[in-house]
Length: 329
Ligand SMILES: Nc1ncnc2c1ncn2[C@@H]1O[C@H](COP(=O)(O)OP(=O)(O)O)[C@@H](O)[C@H]1O
Ligand SMILES: [Mg+2]
Image (tube, rainbow, N blue to C red; front, side, top):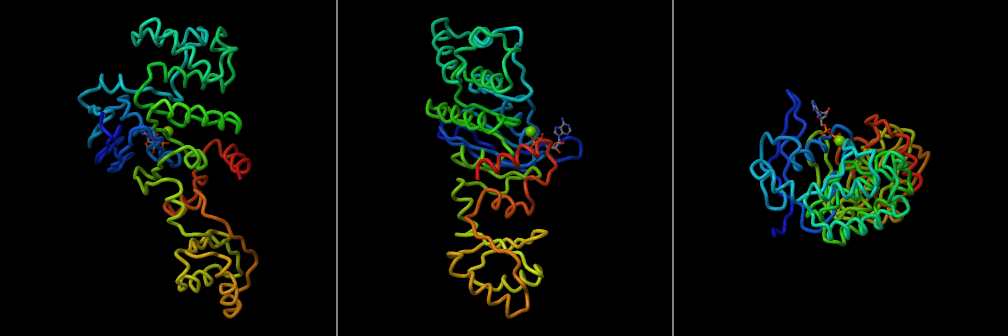
């Protein structure tokens, strides 16, 4: 089997005049968890739908498990598992029946079906719900059942489109655990998310996607290290003037101006350069009203590469997101 389980070259997709996917190329290696991180409307679902053959490819090339999504649709489908928001379980069937039915559709032999169902019910902690109707499960349990179903056929690649949207933090952390154990089984995982922490904590590699374009790709650590050693947040009486002065410092690798504060990317230990920054401000008659030093986060990475915060998009679960951020930091 190919080292790259997903290969995408110059993928483009339009809805009328709107270019939802704009010349995207990337590869996903065998056995890794790879994330598309981006705001609502970035083009994540369009890409995942093309890769899973749910949407016809318009322009460019995409291979999944070595098969061309345009020409070898059936082979692609046999290679993948899908967990999508819009896909429904059969609510009038029990947990067991949903999995059993799925295994039968895919013509899994009886013994293998039975073994796999037992494994997956255990993995997703649904043992006590085995004979409960899907409609009587909680939201988190339904999603776990969808996950189990997506995994019934031991797919080479598992696709998940925003797998934890609307989850509380506990359920989200548990979902990450399931995905890590699935990875251990050798499954390659491609997921989309607009949660920074999800991409950061779960993925081997992340592509940041915005307005249909991949802006940068790397491990979470690589992406954060590119920004420097430390970030200094500075609130001053004149941020514009302060930015102009600080840009001239060699150890200041970049300056982002936010509405209230400056975000300085520092190539050295911030504690060493802070006294100098304070001196320079004083000499120029600029008052510092607040200072904060921290290590670069995914949030900083996102702002740096896209020029805007991820939460500006007015997503409907804005509140959940900020709770999550607080709960994790
Ligand atoms: N079926 C569609 N018809 C027209 N426009 C669409 C359709 N699906 C998505 N779009 C638009 O394409 C862009 C990318 O959407 P999508 O791939 O769903 O992004 P994401 O999953 O990152 O939120 C958005 O501007 C969205 O409004
Ligand atoms: Mg989407």
